[in-house]
Length: 158
Image 1 (cartoon, rainbow, N blue to C red):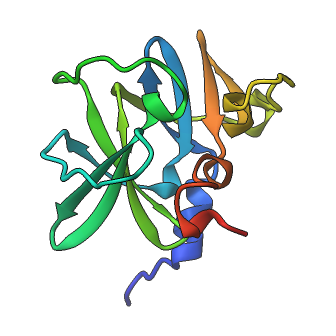
Image 2: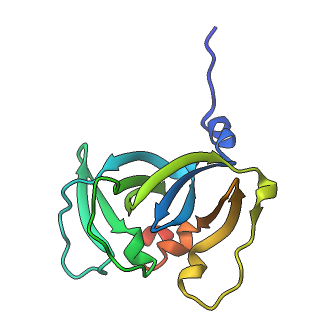
Image 3: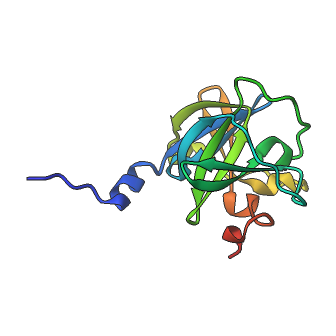
C-alpha cells in the first residue's frame, strides 16, 4: 500500500514555519511554503530601465527568474556582496522570483501566539511588514509579499 500525501497536507505542516534571513542585523521572515531553494550568488543579467533594486534576471535550469535586492527594496543602503549573500527563490502566485539577502539564518517554527501585528508607522517600508514574531532572543519582521511586489510584477496585482 502506498502512502500518498496531498500537497495541501504538506502545506498545512508548513503553516507555522518561516525561513529567517538577515539584512544588516535585522531578522526577516518569509513563510517557508513560499521558499523553493537557496542559491549562492551568481551572475545576474542586468535589465535596462527597471527600478534600481531589480538587479536583473538569472537562468535557473532553463527558467528565467527576475532577481531583486531586498536591501535596496527596503531602502537600506547597498553594500558590496560577499560570501554570505545568497538568493532565495520563492514562488509567489505561480511566478518564481529571486531575493538577494545578506544571509539566511534558519528555518524556524513560530507558534501563532508568538505572532503579533506590526506597529503602526508612517514609513512606506513598514507597509511591507505583515506581522512581527518573537522567537527566543530575536524579533523577526515577517514580510507581506503581496505588498512587497505590488509595483514590481503583475503577479501581485489583486
